[in-house]
Length: 193
Image (tube, rainbow, N blue to C red; front, side, top):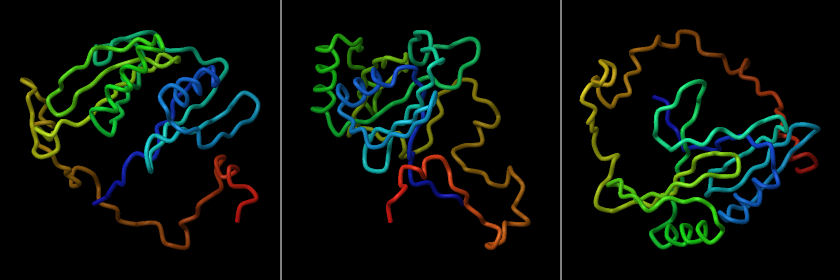
């Protein structure tokens, strides 16, 4: 079975890297840790936590997404609703809510979601962001819960995973054919040993 370590980074898009840096680095307090660019295409990384980053591509022709309430149905092309970032504790949560309000940035009231308390806001690119902290009384990961009154037959199968639903690997790539080619981000380490 494949094991995951976590989300290394999520890559989002902006048409204004300076406004994005001001919001994510200076208002939200995330360290800008790397930047790479060439004409018409930059990519910058912000540290969310140890091992997790938020990255932005700057594309001058990109347009912010239309305003939408998180979790509300949408029509037309869409690949993303919101990103939720967990804060270290309750105090950090309230400090961030106050900081967003003081900056004149729209932020919701605090919402009790049972296992987390949340606030929602929007970055300069129209990206919906949820900030939360964990509540000790409930753990969403401790058992499978299905409260959908009409789950699909696939959802009714349970938590899984069920690897037998896909074909087995018959011919894995031999070690000598497992090649890795340099990617664009490797330029960040040019000249380093």
